[in-house]
Length: 152
Image 1 (cartoon, rainbow, N blue to C red):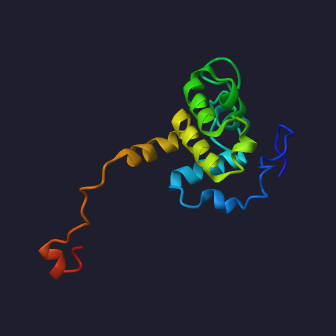
Image 2 (cartoon, rainbow, N blue to C red):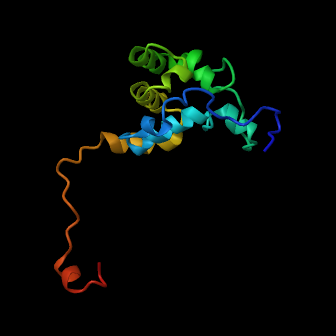
Image 3 (cartoon, one colour):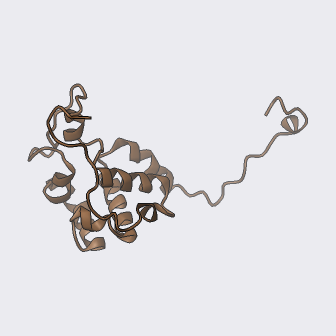
């Protein structure tokens, strides 16, 4: 499928020597999804949304210093300084292709993407992750539901 801009479709061009599924093993769903989005670079940042023609979306980053691309938020965006520093501390680099070759670093990259708060779909997942569920109990059926299965 050709794109209007003449650019090729996004695919991850490095790091396949590591079995990709090993990067996702034991990750919570929202972190595994974040790793997948980072590997494909098909994520809901303004530049991509504008490229695919979402109405009313400008490719500009809200920081005002460039287009909101993955490379911009990884390396330049002034509003992402702290998340970027956290990623650098955990991985030793901000070079995404290097980071996504190792499971530990890929997990750190997923957590970084979540920390940026740039993608709305991850906000609820982060809230759920913070909830304390230690005192939760399994759903208890009422006496009526026990004796009348059509109620349950």
